[in-house]
Length: 172
Ligand code: CO
Image (cartoon, rainbow, N blue to C red):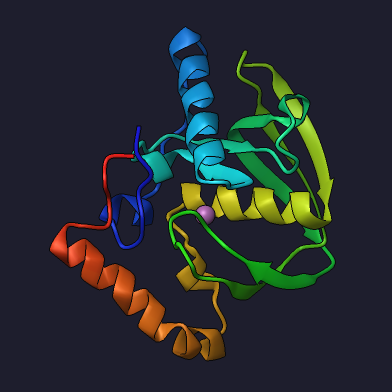
């Protein structure tokens, strides 16, 4: 399983709902955590490993007990506002100030297919909103302020050139 980086087209596509909750799904989520830890991330969405399924994994602390897997997540309510620097494993070296809701509520399935309501604040709310965006093909570069877009233009171009050369994705 390899990490997909901007601007690979799979990142811009909409993911499909998961319908079967089986061992294959649970193994896939386990592999996603592996990729996320290897790249020192706190969240990862399935399109970032090239799979267009609505699955996200998050771990803010790195402790196994804090692993969160959400399948078919929906954010039903987002209130308040927080602005902070945000990164993305698919945009190595790029950080942009992004506005997100301060508190979100929503619903998802766990890896067993059970319905779970969730409520999150601060960084966890930010992480969930970021990963759910991935499932709709919405990326960091789509959420950046015009100022950041100009400031980060060179960095974005670097990733585009690496992709054009076919060197941005060593099998890792
Ligand atoms: Co991301």
